[in-house]
Image (tube, rainbow, N blue to C red):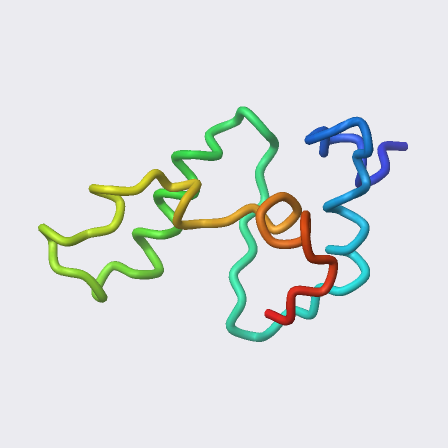
Length: 90
């Protein structure tokens, strides 16, 4: 059986981002979680998710996806949030 750490390979110590996420993450009713296998359309899915959630909040010529990559707008919890701070207080 595959455990939750097998897919996360940012460094030789694979548990650095995943364990704090599993230990400290507190979900809220307004949270949106996007789950996808790596290399299976992650960039496209992040762009689609951002566009759906924020479709009315920006003018067409000021839309963030025109200037930023989807990975900058929709963060990876394991890498970007919990990597350096196991309890970021989100």
